[in-house]
View 1 (spheres, rainbow, N blue to C red):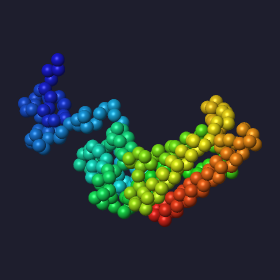
View 2: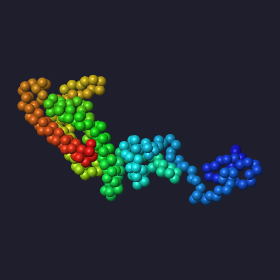
View 3: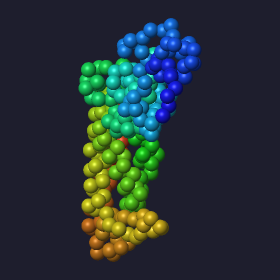
View 4: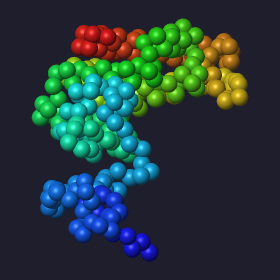
Length: 264
């Protein structure tokens, strides 16, 4: 058992010399404190030892927001963080970061106009860039060309469309600007219609590669079913072209809106 006399000042464990008759070391013997003014130890519940914590600089890199925007969100409570010391130093847990990335700033914050014009644009640019990383403009045009002129697509192509549409289903992946939200809603509906059509009207041609990447072609294709099915195939091809042309128009309108509102 440690029977050494130690300084009673909170946070100090200095061993008192035998000649020291008081309760504090030389560094703290002249300092008075109360329960209100004494420095408070860090709580384990606030900063778990094994929990990954992120600084403001980390959030700037991960979320693609400016330093000012991140700090404003922390102050407003849109991102729950722990403030360290008297300076503007914040720490955010891994769990909270994951929550924010999924949900984004609350809709109630947006409806009250809490976000500034710059913050709104910053948020919407981030949403566009994330969606574009899933399926870019070039990839959209290439896919629609294959469907329209070759009447075929792969399982990888379908997964890409599905991921793109599902991206906008998550609560945090919505635009704040109303024009962008309207364009996104049309895009959403149009590409869900495209997925439904190709699911109902295409059939497996073959599997290839280690990952069994299915190749699907328009049903009743003459190369597979012979000339007797040509009329059924032509009717499906006609309907496919209509769906594709609609998808092209919708995506171009979405892209034009992004360029007008966000300048990218």
